[in-house]
Image 1 (cartoon, rainbow, N blue to C red):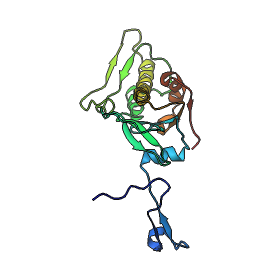
Image 2 (cartoon, rainbow, N blue to C red):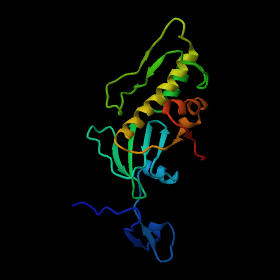
Image 3 (cartoon, rainbow, N blue to C red):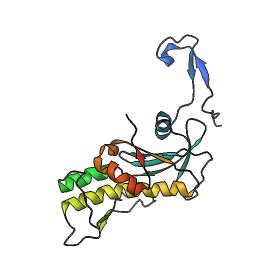
Image 4 (cartoon, helix red, strand yellow):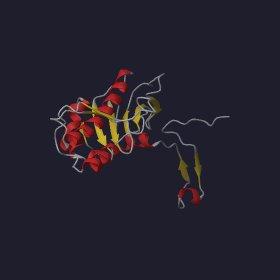
Length: 211
């Protein structure tokens, strides 16, 4: 009923048809297993056990390479395989770097202006996947007459995004995955504010790989 699941270094077949290979490949074209977007990203980054990538795109994804499979009966962590024979526990949030776009559009300020002054953003604008709150909405708390400025509000949007990813990292860590290195990728990694605040909020040094 189900197809055979191949290991990462196994070949499914050899096809000589140029229409499949894209050209006439001598000896035929080897058909091998592929991978999903996050598994291929980890392969392209050369990630090893103990590495975790934090990808800030439309969604936010924290994905770790783990020696052993991860089982999360709550469903917060998805227990995928990577492309090398290890495992890829990951947590995904719906509200990624577009949080920053929303903040910038509403406030008319740059991402990189400093200071949140005690304001906290809970960034569940479209509901949320991690944690599983599909009907949640975003909220700003801690507002006073003194700290309600455009600059503080902009900083709160950046901190809210990063704190959401910290939640994902802690969920992965709580299931036994080792985290020794964080790689920051995706469109959100272009923000100076994100790169500046990420180490303090994520709790360790952060590397931004070269494109």
